[in-house]
Length: 175
Image 1 (cartoon, rainbow, N blue to C red):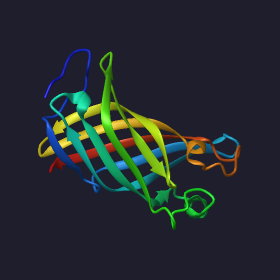
Image 2: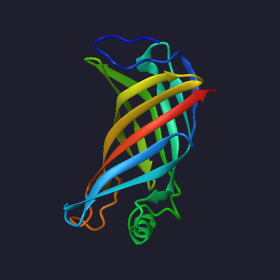
Image 3: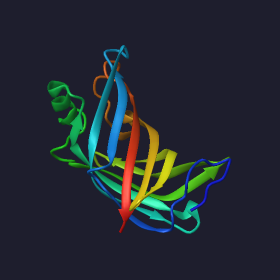
Image 4: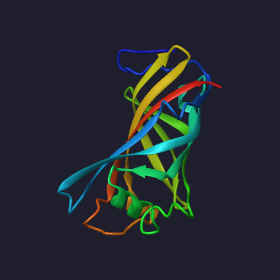
């Protein structure tokens, strides 16, 4: 557990932590209607684990997301996004993330990993914005920008934004 003036993040004790899917959230922001309107939504986390190494940069994480949980509060839009046109959740029910590297630069930490959507795997970097040691566990907030085209999801170019900004609020307990 360390904290420095240059780094406001608190590094938890080394060990393995199980992500609490009920207390964790994955939200996103994107745009539609030719970029004129904002869209907020979420995904549900099914499972995950965080491994904190004695040397923080050797830490890693893995998570499984329920692709069918995509929701924006608009049932007709959500149904289209879950269809073969976008996420193809019937054939690809899970979105997965795996990381085994954390990079530190000027007091900022980035979790490097691979995201798999619709059987396509691409590198992704999550900027760790907050970390906290809590009674019975840890919590993190991280953000990333996802390019849906990189995963072969190119339907409705122009009408639906290319990028999604994801925010992950993760709560985990010692395994």
